[in-house]
Amino acid sequence: MPQAFLYLLRHAPTALNEKSDERARGWSPAPIDPKRGPRIAEAAFQELASRRIQLIVTSDIQRALDTARIGARKLGVPVYPTELLRPWNIGELEGQPSAAVAPVLLFHRENPEDAPSGGESFAAFCARAMHAIRDLVLTAAAPPYPRMAVVTHKSVLLLVRPTIEGVPPDPKDREAPDPGRIVTLKIAPDGVTAHGL
Image 1 (cartoon, one colour):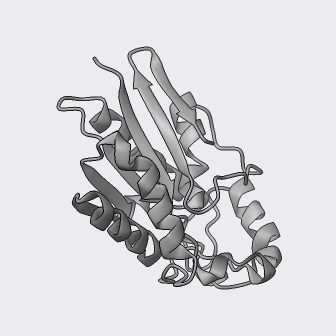
Image 2 (cartoon, rainbow, N blue to C red):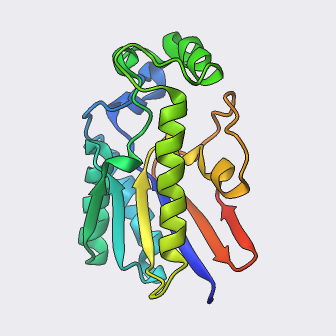
């Protein structure tokens, strides 16, 4: 098997990502910020231009779709949306100030079978997203070795390392790449390594 790569990209920022008034996003249909978002998405896909990307797989949530469509125009490749790459559905916590809901979300991560009201349990989210990550790795590592960019969300990117290392997610781990940043997975016969996390 030749060495294969998978490029994971956190969607460009929305107005809800503003540090001064950051809001919990979940499945909200917020588009990318019209001032910063396109510029950040363009820069990310410019960075990927030399990687001969053949297709973009993306979460079907609006902010990810917006980002992927900018990439598709820049690279001249098709976009394949999927609900499997959606972030954690946090239900009624969506849209509330991030600082206020942080302890509630931590409770649900530490009690993964307990779902937020109107949302999905952390266990169900992890099962869905980690399965999607594994499938993408297997697809990238099989003939004809497609070169894929994947646009997704912070909560999904936080599951990349546990997925490739085969360990449970750390409920306290909240360090993820900033919007528009790229994580490269290098896939070799002896395993998968992540760069940019």
